[in-house]
Length: 623
Image (cartoon, rainbow, N blue to C red; front, side):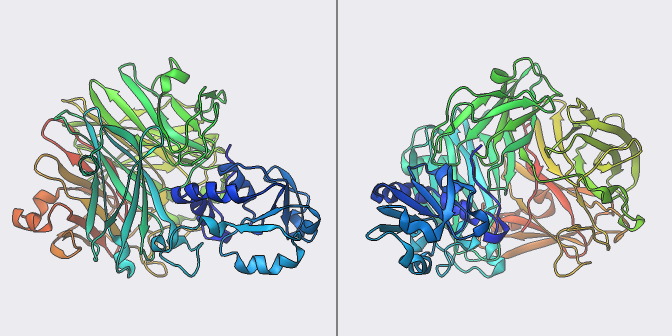
């Protein structure tokens, strides 16, 4: 496993990791290391020696710290010594593993070996032009970044779609620094894109990028770094994969998680007529070693490792059948990723149709919470995982609970089913599922033509819960056979009472739940839609007070329409039906719909639908 810490509350989230992992830092580190003359002493004031040397290995002869409690501990593969002894090291070079390090160097200068050259990580800083907060380098707003699977090959193209939501927090001039890597990790193009001054939409289309830079077919990753942001350091987007050769493939994934994980889960094993490929994108400048990635049937604890390494920033397609032959749906696959990759995508090919979806971070820092089983009546049903039931006449809806923590050995779950008007149409206790369960269930047996389901905890047969309840939701067109899938986790929704950090989406102190969801616009060939769900753990407002706001590419309001959703109900929204043609034309190709509600928190799924039986679906994101 790569010895990196991707979340550190002391440093403001994963800022140090992002500062080290940036592609421009990776380029600069080579020059820094070239200046170091052996023997080299490393002073580690911020405790990042392990991450630095894991991501950028180099020969270090000694490591020094100022924390008495850290003396004698392993740092970067060496035993840490007191910084007061650094003068005895005989080092000809001292590397101070810190940013904004001038004052640190001045303070330890009397202790350093006489004549030693001193270098710091300020040598690998990003240029000032790429910084939002120049006064403090390790400010989280300096590293609002993410990765995207990006492809224009084999008749498939990709399109990143989002909005300048930073403008809502006061950002005036936001732009993107973009770098495209090919499958070997080579840089294909680097460019910048200015965003609208207001909260307007934007897109990055692989076909346009390919034409702009005269590129051939490519499959790789796009690194996105937002500059000039405010209020929010996460780059959120929807990624459409569509057939650019008039084929039938269409899919959508959403992303916001920009950090690597030791494990990921929610990868389905293939059906007999499917091929499942996991796209592994090395997020770092250091190779992933042979056996650095492994797959395991969930709960089996018999991981099978890849035999070859993956180069820096390279993208590799791994057919899961190569490592786990004969494994079939409804078995689930756990990815042992060793913190080498940001949340991967997987691709399912079935009857010449391709769909893309994402796995989720499997947490290793959770334990069972006995308080969930004894929540007071005021919390109602507690944690809820809502998902849409698409119109039964056309679609088959199915789901599969997915363990999403290394500590989850059982899942005590019940399914509740609701019609669009909020009436409960049925429930089914699914049992206290084992980690290696093989349950996958469709909704055809319930008396509901359209609506939504909710997975909730049910302890009638015992079991444990930690609040991190996840599931995979799969939808299939009964006529065309096209499928789409999404996955997400549970929250407590719409109660006046709180438990730990739930419910979320408060504007101000509770109770003050709100909704702000992004719904992109489609076009004549592929129309966008959303399923908006009003889940409620306990009694809340009888109806939502939802507004669909149509914004143009500059963030200006073009039109708005009210929508009323019953508590525990849902609605399917089509922008081309909600707004007239003139308003949609005024919104333009980068316009979008903002779903707003200041009385409750809605949860939604969005996608595109064409006339050939193709559609896409993933959960919506808010800002």
